[in-house]
Image (cartoon, rainbow, N blue to C red; front, side):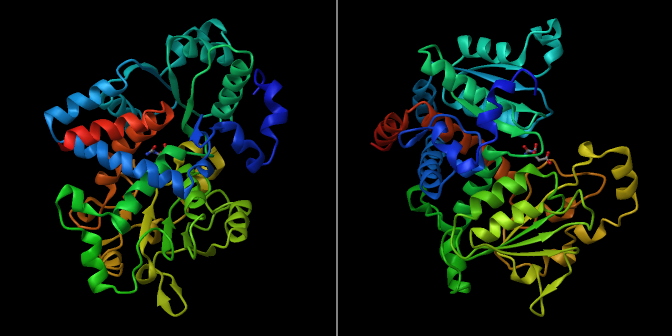
Length: 395
Ligand code: NCD
């Protein structure tokens, strides 16, 4: 890291010691780790996201939302490729009237003149009210949060940092939208939106199905070694009771879930099992038939060394593809999630699955826009104002 060496002591501390530094009373100050997304906070954000999506249906609602944070400006600092995260944060800002600006390539900023990353970030904080950032360097956003906290202590200007993807480590806002999709699938009450609840219909056919993310089996398939979205989601899900996780990965050291992560999940009471095919069985039954929610991911080739690339070339990836035959084994309600992008060459989810009513990935991506808007409302402490305008919207 070099220029962030002064934060080494802070970086090396255990996670639970760090977390309080990213909170302000019962509100997030920065969002850096998926572990900050507690069930209570997720519920608050879910309600706000539902209000925002509801209000967005009418011109009047849209105009009211556009006024909510019209006095705020956001910097989108994305030096790693992104389509959905970048665009959905931008759309979320636009819904709330937040003005956006972006740096997507350091070649166009003064970093080419050897300006340090720390100086760049401090400059962004001078002009903008929130910094949403994605970089290849795992600990960068965490260091930026420490820098902002240090400035705050010195009574200087300091703004919230949102980690929009950090190296191969963490992607908390993806876990946020994945959870919003899971919560909507398994608990959503559409009464306010005057639609029938699909969940209530499901419960009629599956009486053992309980509301919420607890007491369910989650099957994660693909690249668990470098896939930051799966790790962040598993971390959040591990907070719920009686969760079981199946990790289905090619048998390669780079792609399997890290031992330390599995130990951490087990220590939190999660029942974890690993497999190397979607056709595997557990307790005498196909794992797909026991799955309540399927989370597909792509193989993250950009992290491969030449040697790993050659080794992966030898691996048959067909056991990690969701074919229509495999989808037919899944429970009839099990949502099929994918953080996207999917690999159009490998085809871990072929387009023939897209019309399946359980295929949630496009809705999941759109959910990202609503829940990221809710996150911005929360970070700017505008939740009460949102309730107020939602009340007026209803009159
Ligand atoms: C993911 C990411 O960037 O980690 N994309 C996303 O934000 N939806 C997943 C990926 O790149 O595979």
